[in-house]
Image (cartoon, rainbow, N blue to C red; front, side, top):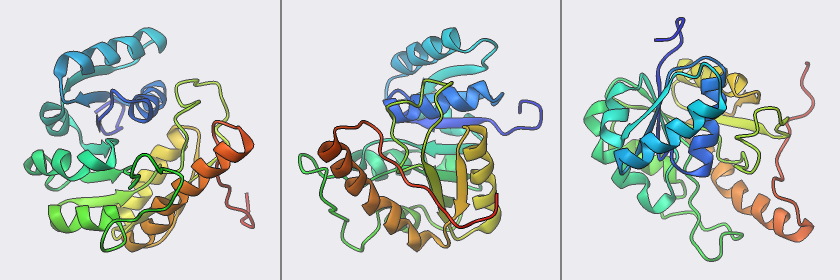
Length: 222
């Protein structure tokens, strides 16, 4: 644990979203383990990030080893791989917070809301993993476009949904470490809003020819 900060494992961390979040947390002083299906690819991405971020404590491993090492685990894989990836490391997730960044996009029509049966991808994951894993939904609406540009001000807030309030607080701290604003968005069932909103933001990006439309929560005191 770096300076009292939990070690973070980012499963699927070789992709744009996962590597971008990993970069921001590594820059904030967290120990980060990049997880991937292939350890070699994860190690290569970790080496790239370490070269970009002076003093970063970051390494790569396969998803199983990363999940075992992480005190908080972040799932950033495509929807098609969500359950298989998480269930494949279920034993390593017991007693931990799992942050699910999954968006139920169904290519090629990713600009249309296509929620899974039951309405929420993250609710289905929590049911599959059981109560021993504290699943929190967050970061679905953050565009990967500028994540690895650590000097870029990300113009988007983070909706954090989960049944465990203390776990939500921990995730909000991670949002702040990534230079974002995180907000309690209620119980895990409310994740359906963030899951559906991503397709709306993609549609806005396409219509207005921008790369990173986002959301802001207004009306609150600074």
